[in-house]
Image (cartoon, rainbow, N blue to C red; front, side, top):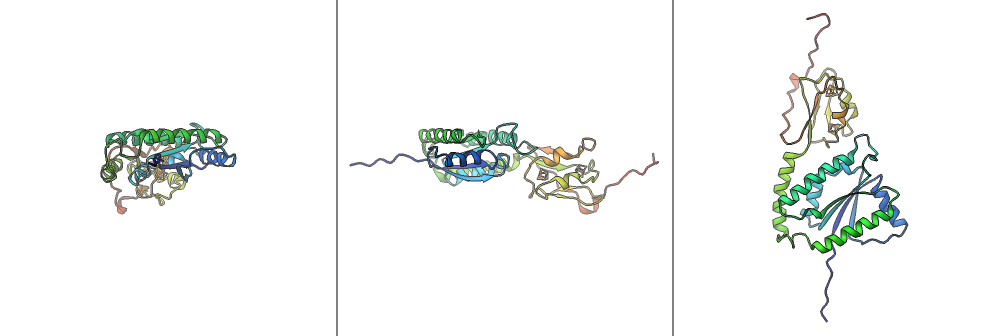
Length: 246
Ligand code: SF4
Ligand code: SF4
């Protein structure tokens, strides 16, 4: 007797703590059935998912990547991270297409904490879709080795395209607001010192960009270009015009 094994896709899921993860939890507690193909990583916000996470998953052989967040305008953070997730997924899908992988292998869905049934349905549907697509690389005519090479090239593109934030030393007044609000401690501050973003620590959450007072507007959002090098320490002192002087 010839045994045929149905292809079981491997799915990596990044679920936002507040909505989709809670929805998945509810699905489990309520015993709603869905395929066991997904392995879940809990993140605090769908906006935390970096394109590198997605491409690392594919590079390691995931057949599909799932991102689950709160419905738009229901993000638990003032920064509306799920809008950021929309941008990240759009860009990642484009890059998948550029390297010849089916962009349907990447899916973003909104699931609230009370939508256990919806979580089960969405995962059932995504698993079915991936089964129809087949294993990563097979319909695309690429082996994992080639996919890894292509993904490395895509990652270089991501590094160039990643949204970055930069403080314009000519505009920064050292008010300190951004440094106090940065959740990652990524801003070097100091009294009367031009503030600097440490790019290696920055998660591009956008908080500093929103919090720099409009009258200063010292923080720039950079989408495609490299970030300028930080100014040297000796040039960081903010020169203030003295009162009464012309
Ligand atoms: S974007 Fe976010 S993490 Fe980066 S420096 Fe600004 S506040 Fe900090
Ligand atoms: S909030 Fe703006 S002006 Fe104030 S320290 Fe940060 S970058 Fe400079």
